[in-house]
Image 1 (cartoon, rainbow, N blue to C red):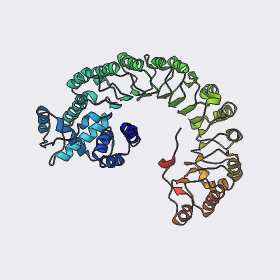
Image 2: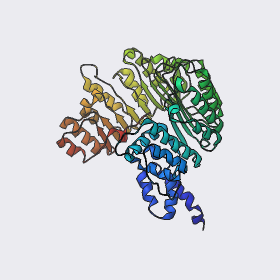
Image 3: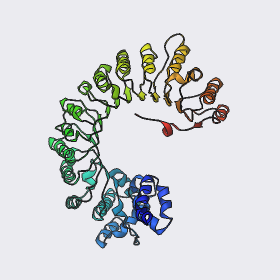
Image 4: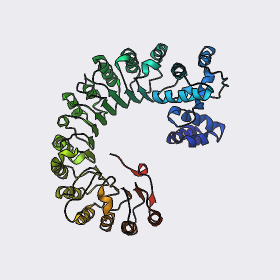
Length: 496
């Protein structure tokens, strides 16, 4: 009896785990009527993001009234839509306005045999769908809006419908806003007001903003942030020019100081507003892309990812010292012209951050400081060393040998792409004792290198997957695949 009672809940867990596997979900729908009823809502949560035939859009239109169907006829579409078993529109959970626009255009093309779709037709049908989603009782979990097109696409009546429908945005958890322009300030302000009123459960908020917005846009975004009960991830990216004034957006993150866990900033010049991050008790991940004035940031982190041009190592030393023993994952891309500061960075990491498990450090030199750091990272599991163009000195093989011997016995993953280290694979693996499971290299051209790799596989019995960017010649490949699986880089590449 109890098993029957819990069966729907158990099936829901299964279908949730199959959420992005559309063919598996489709197979489940064919098992029985009960399975069909359970799986269909999952199949139709995110239809516009899958690369599939746009004809699925036709299934929505059986629920249009006669006036709405006349809109289709105005667009040159005279098709009868049979009644469906389900009102598919109410199952929508994920909406990306750009994907919606693309699929609608493809659908119109499939319906018109002798003409191209007009922009006005695309926008009319998008509005029909938007209205259907709202009025069918859909509750979005994820919304991605490129607002550059928003005013042009969405008609005023949709704003009215959204304004009186509290349900559509009430469970929104992931919100991305991009492309606010001077031409759509009024409509965007209305939309932001609706979001502020109806959303309190956003966990992930991503903003891409221009620097010349009028303050009321910033203040509307500030109010949305403050309205959330538990914001965990926040991203702010400047478009074109650097963002220098934030009008309270960053300061408002203090209202999320108990929940905020991850912050991403890009093309921003940090100012005193960013000091609020030091008050966020659970902030553990900070990702910085092309930002200035970083020395103002002194948060204590377990994950730090920085890509900046130019970047002075001395500007991030305070963050590293503050994070210290907590820091576990680190990715730093330094501009080449500031290599003279890298010894400061390496020495700081060696002295303050011994618990790093993931390290991405491009353009590093095989120096005493670098070897000292590697020997000190006895918990290191993932190591990425890109853009090493030469090994200094008259005897590079000795430095490669020393490097291989220093690799810790915890290391499972080694990424040496875009570097000259592929030339020394034989030396590296003849002297490596790390239990590597994953290896990424540019090329393997010689029998000597292939032999060293095979002998490493036999000796350590740990290496499972290898990515080689340039295809192996057949005779080497035939030998290598007996011991490892060759895979594309995106199957095994690990980011910070």
